[in-house]
Image (cartoon, rainbow, N blue to C red; front, side, top):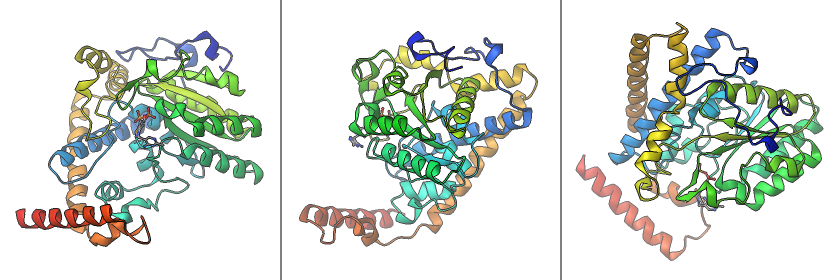
Length: 362
Ligand SMILES: Cc1ncc(C[n+]2csc(CCOP(=O)(O)OP(=O)(O)O)c2C)c(N)n1
């Protein structure tokens, strides 16, 4: 497959079209119906949670959040086929994967509510915390890969980064070491077309991200990240390669961030409605649903019921988290400095006043 879809050919690996019709039978993955339905249900759950977190933020009930809306199939393709002992090294838009790894949605809520206790995700075995410092997670992923190889384990590290992250030194160092050491790391670049307001065209001098794999000396694939089957097949092939000791792989998942960069960003300032409408047609959840319905594996009625159940569950968990949430103001500032600088002392005072105002408002 790495030869057929060699990055120099600049092809986009796809299995289905925008209407969920299979257009590439030859590479259709072997995936049983129950796994497929599980993947779809998880996608829908993650999407419901993601959209609702944005609403909670707008209601002042949760802090800044980076939505994964529109990119869910990329991490779900890993979620549904990774092995328990495999490692996940996230960026910050992989909600379906955190949940599949065992993180609880309540911990995810707590994390974005500023509660230090929500950052551990201790139920998620072999997963690093999310990484806001862009691409700094990648050298760690290579270190993990090196340790797996050294200890002769047949596990894989799935490391995520955005298109903007590929412009960092950390990306280069990680890719170079991974190729030289032939470590079992699958790099997944979520090319969602923007790094905040910076469009992909101005991010790199190359036409694609996948082509960079050639210079580093590892296989690369450019995949339609909104096509669940294509992502599944690409991850399957890359995992086999890494697991069998052949080294790292770079996957460019071409996708689109349908939401804002974070809840403090306004994407209408730097992209057009026409562009958003174009990508709406390529939406990953819509496409997989169309496939399932056409193939009589799912119905509109089941879909409505499932969406309602997901929303209900997310809201129940959120309300429970709000009720359970308890942390001292000091905890928010505890792990920054041994002695708090003046500006942070001022921030703390302002935050205290905000909390008092909020408490009175209830
Ligand atoms: C080292 C570092 N530099 C700058 C930032 C500020 N910053 C936050 S998100 C972001 C853009 C990231 O874009 P990309 O890697 O494409 O990921 P996306 O947000 O699109 O998922 C930047 C520059 C940061 N968090 N870390």
